[in-house]
Length: 140
Image 1: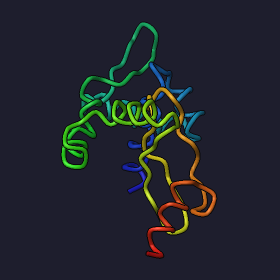
Image 2 (image 1 turned 180 degrees about the vertical axis):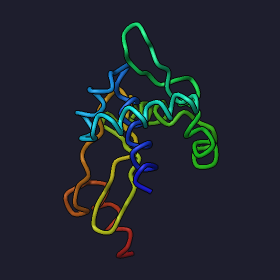
Image 3 (image 1 turned 180 degrees about the horizontal axis):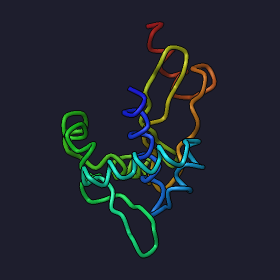
Image 4 (image 1 turned 120 degrees about the vertical axis):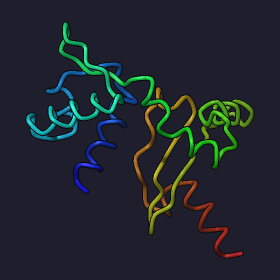
């Protein structure tokens, strides 16, 4: 199970990075260099990452972009989530996010111009506007 979580964390890392070396990934995620190298090679063999031998770096492949496509189709009707959030933010003149609620916490999943703009950190339900809105709906 740990390797599955690590693979997803690596793919999230590459959503924000154009390319990176094994050491950059290992340092950023706090993994040992040897297991990071094996994990990156595994993702290359599955065609989710590309390896650039001249620079000794990795980058996300086109296939990586398809990882959330099926979910996006079911949840958002095939719409580009980032474009929808950008449009909402423009019309409302404020930031818009897709959030997930875990017990007592708000986790930000996507936001305007995501992944280029960093997402806010998770927050206690009572500290986040989305959490307060969610809690208010429970009282109706």
